[in-house]
Image 1: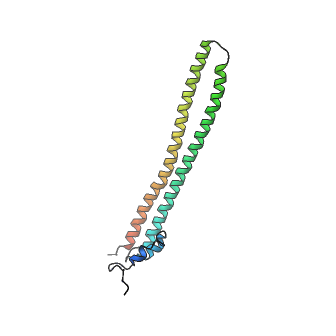
Image 2: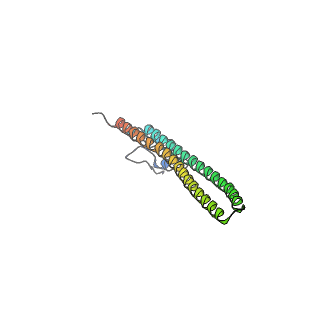
Image 3: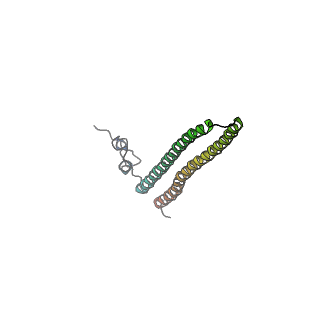
Length: 158
């Protein structure tokens, strides 16, 4: 005799809920989970939008990281080119005082450039983070409103 795995309180088959072939397909899995007065399609639609927003935020974060990495590579290339020309300048003939003054000027210029580059990279990271956070923040607000609407539709009218 086959056992009945149905939940006596809700009309859905627990074995179907745990079926690994349906695990990734939330809409099919939740279709078996029927609670009277609850708009499961509305809840699933909200969750789909949440996942889409998370995907968009992740994409923005990755694109921001890629932009930072490209800029870092460009900064490194420029630094190497400048280092090569700087070494040539340092080897040029001149008095020891001229070389010391030239060296001090170069160190100051490189320090200022390094600070500017770090500031630029920090701004790029902050911009990417803000864009991703804005997507998530607006989605959280919309999701809360959607859930309120879904819940109010399922509540019995008085």
